[in-house]
Image (cartoon, rainbow, N blue to C red; front, top):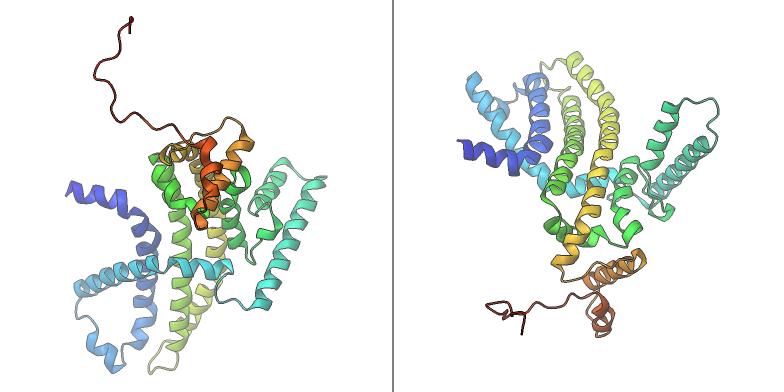
Length: 318
């Protein structure tokens, strides 16, 4: 039993907290509010559990199932909220213009701090920090920019493209830094899953209105309340990216040296040379091999170790 709990806490904690828990909350809300109005439908009446224990088992199984499905679909779910998926070109461009104007407005407020307390100035700096430094990297949504700002960190500082080398960096980086990234992302996953679940339950509540015997007032109030909570969960997801960004920054800073060692490279002492090395590594990972890479990598390659080291160190007279 202890090994099972240890495995859940070590490997499945992000899945349980980030996706299964919000799925169970939304399913519980559906069963308590929406399902009674749909129960009179013949198909639903036939599969409805007969006892409280059966209902609890159904809720648990459904929560685990939906949590696993949401976890598998996390990439398109995130990309939609970031503004990259299913966004028309006009909406994408309009969103980027709005985000650029918002970033410029925050920067203008920071440059004119008259009449603002230190706390207010710090909050403005936090808001500006949720945007990428390069305006060409701006996304059309606040969540997209909050995530994009730490996706560009490695490339901006060291020319280490974490989007290309993420698996290598995660494999070679310190275990504690990897765990911090996973834990920090779990908070964002939780709010994203909660947001989508509220949208689905609100839509089902509105669809249940025409059903016979539906508690229309309860369904309408539930749909309105859930729709009102969606912006709150979205903002919470944006704020939760601060810890995620700090964890990714730590992984990049602490994982560069182990990554270079794992790739058989020597980390240069000069930052400019290190940036040139990581640019070569990124290019090597993205593009087909060329013979010119041999000479380009030569200054950074570590000397091969002796495959047949002597059994005894040489004496002083050797």
